[in-house]
Length: 168
Image 1 (spheres, one colour):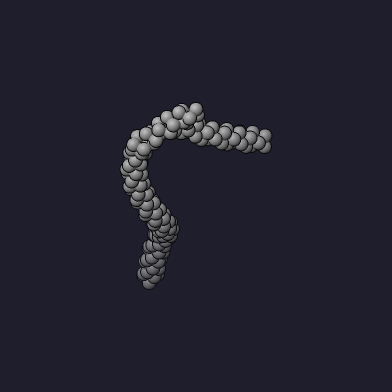
Image 2 (cartoon, one colour; image 1 turned 30 degrees about the vertical axis):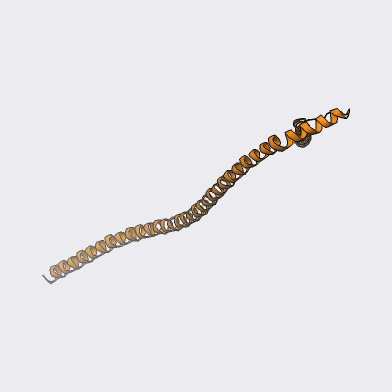
């Protein structure tokens, strides 16, 4: 009986060791799986944190750009308001000057011009041209100068364009 008891005891020890090894194998596999999951999730977490940092940096950059554009827009609005004030002032000054010019023309120039021409005719001289003729001649000269300048600019632009097309 001693042999049977020893056999049974050996068998129980072997079964116990097998169970222990089986448990070790299953726990080791669970540990390997857990470690793989942990490493994978840690890598994903690092990537997400990196993306979050990049996103925050881009957000800050865009906020700075937005602030700069807002300031530019405020400056443009201030400039437009200033221009509107200058425009109103110039319009008023122009109206005042036009009234003054018309008053001088009607009350001083026209009577003097008529008197001078009357005296000139009495003395056998030709009449002086009216100021309107002089103004029209001046305006024609200014328009001609502008036209010449425009033609020169157009000519130089065409030369540049043809030089560029030859280079290409």
